[in-house]
Each structure stands twice: as structure tokens, then as C-alpha cells.
Image 1 (cartoon, rainbow, N blue to C red):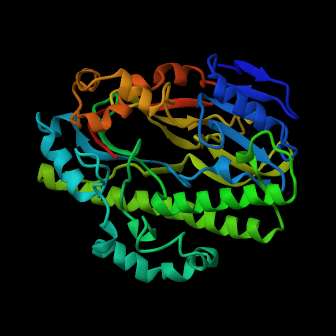
Image 2 (image 1 turned 120 degrees about the vertical axis):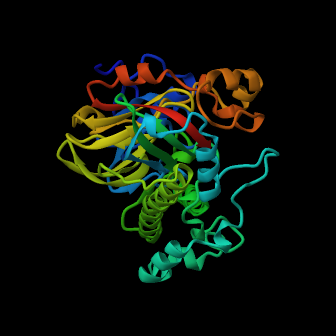
Length: 407
């Protein structure tokens, strides 16, 4: 589908790949389009919805500056997927043992009482994580700004030692079947607590700088850091580190999941296609419309011509492996998922445990009050999202989960 809406009241237009955009999200897009650092236009993906700092599902090109709140606090959050040497016939009728093995292998989420289920994971990291840490001398690669500010990294926080853990909220691990009933593992996670602390720290610094320089902003969360400043240089190093952390974090979890599935099925598991591992909350330098820009994708994945990506639905609906078409109007980007239609609190008010069980029928997963906020009914129709971006990507595989482990 082509662009559905265009906002033209700012410095640059906003191109929107959706008919429906909530008022709060539209206001956020308008605010971004008014900034002097924006290049050419802003793109909003078909899963666009309101988010902290900047709209989720937005692609923002900036010249010689970055907006920390647009990058957000879940720096490097993204998806990973692997196709296995298994078919549906290789799976048992009752998949509870598979879910239990995965839950035991990957620290994650919350307990049934709402407490954290992964705190303290750093105290006993696995041997392969310890070896990785030692061989790559990770501590020497930590940007100095992180070590200079104890609140950013520390043993009393969800620190960098949380490598190999899933997190909470909408992060998840799934066992899926594709259109040929072949088995896939798919997961969603990012840079964990340290990414959050990096994001919040620099968002606050950007706000203070804007106040100090008396820069008028339509929203204080759109405070930006200009190239050449010490703060900008520190931010780039910290963000790069967090994005790399997120990528490796997903790799370590995938290793643990493959071993867990192998243990549950009592047979060796092999990945038979190259794994896909892609960010959907990040910033990097790219060239668009003949200009080198800092391109921020907040809830969007890169979809250059030929790029493979992952677009998940909710915990009871389909997900997609896609190939990018390289559409310049989206800045070679596409949606990162279904996108929420309501807040977590609203979902908890509106739905019951019975609703959750009905909407996740056929999926081996938690069906208790602690995960009601992730119920499929709180998300957009993933098929409509896909229809609205057929100019941006083509579908390679359609996946449906049979096991879901929620963060």
C-alpha cells in the first residue's frame, strides 16, 4: 500500500503508512517534524502508536544531531529467528516440557506474584558467557562515560552482566511453525537494564542542555545533542556499546534455547538457515536523499532491498519473516510488529484471564493475570499492518507460535 496520510504543518512532511493514528501519536509526529535538524521528511510505519519520548513506529532522519528520547531507553531492542531441522511431527502433543526447559534455560520475566524472575542472573553467568567476557575483554571496551557514572553501571542494577537474559514486558521467546510446518525459534529482547540507564541518563542531559541554551522545543523530550559536543561523543559511544550488547544478548539466549529444546525433545537440534538478528530501536549513519544523516528507527526495522527482517504479531497471532524492497519514502524501513492499540493498564482493565486463555488457545504459554497486558486484543491486526506495508516488504515465511515464553 502507498502512503495513507501526510502531515504538512511542520518544517518537513510526515508520511504515514496507516489510516488510523491516535491523536497523541499524531501530535508527537507533528512535534518531531517541526525540529530544525530533521532532513526531508519523517516516516511513520503502519504499526505506529504513541510512545515515551517519540512515536513508536517512527523513522527520523536528523542532520548533525541525535534525539536521545527518539532512540529511547530499550536501546538495540530487536528480534532474532532461526529455522531448525525439525518439523511439527517432531514435536510432542503436550509442549509444556519444552516451555519449562526454555524458562529454566533463560532468566526472564516476572513471577506469578509480579516479582522479578531474573534478578541475580549476573551472579552465576554461564561458562560460555564468562569465556566470551574474558576473550573479548569486554570491560576494557565499556565506554569511559559508563565507568565514570556509577549509576549507569553497577552490581546493584540490571547491569552489563545481564548478558543472556530476556527481560520483562513485551519481550518473549517463541517456538513457531511456518507455512510448511517447519519449526522456528524466535525471540525479542534488547540491551536490558544498562540500555535503559544509558537512555535515561542522556535524555536528562539533552534536556538540561536545551534549557541551558534556551532552545525552544515543541516537547522537552525532543531535546537533541549536536555533533561535536562532548556529550554527543559520549552518547554515540554508549549507544554503540548498548546496541552491540543487545545483538550479542540475543545470540546467547538463542544458544541457550536451542540446548533447552534439544534437551526437551531428547534429540540434537541444528539451525538450517542463517539466523536473522535485527534491531528495531536504534540509530546509525545512513545516506538518504543525497544526505548523510543519523537515522533513528524507533520501532522500525531496516528494509533495504534484499534485507531479511522479522515482524512479530502478538502472543496469539501470526508473525512474518520478510524481505525488504528498499522503498526510499520509508527510508528503507518497515514496521517492527503489530503495535499496541491500548496501554497496558487499559488492557488489564478491559480483559480477563478467561479472555487471555481464549485468545491464546492452542499456544503453550502462561495464561495468568501477570501477562494480561500482553493479550492479543491489546494489539493491532497484524495482517492489516502487513497489508499496509506491501510497498515496503514482501513476505518470505509466515510463522505461528505453538510455545510462548513471556518476559
